[in-house]
Image (cartoon, rainbow, N blue to C red):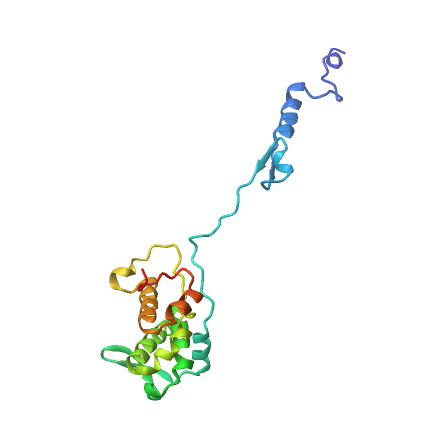
Length: 201
């Protein structure tokens, strides 16, 4: 009888100190919500932060027309190895090439980073400009679009070796303006609005 009075029987209730933490845990449980919503203004709500913007994440370049043409075998070129390193073996005379067709494609390949695409693009441009003569000037308006390349926000230490693509593009655009005729600046500015004239300033 004494046991029943003290609540030690089979139907006894829980002591109040055990029930209180359960109520507190229900009250303090926080909900996660997106920012700038009605739910975000409620009590016991934690607003989750925005996702990472990815400003410094490397963005892969899309496959270029240069790569597509190379993989189809449309270029009259092959890789030749000699004691000085790699070079392009041209299957036709460079002077006989259709510069309006090939030179913009090679400039398009400048944003390629994998071998052999990047090698063929750079060396092909070098060879064509070296042997092109008066065929180059009429093609200049077609070259502005392919060289409109952004190297991103990262620090590029290759300017010490004169390999920084941004600086090379700037120099190329300035050469286009100097030697491209009276409408060269207007054409460059139309395609690259941020370009500043090297002759007018």
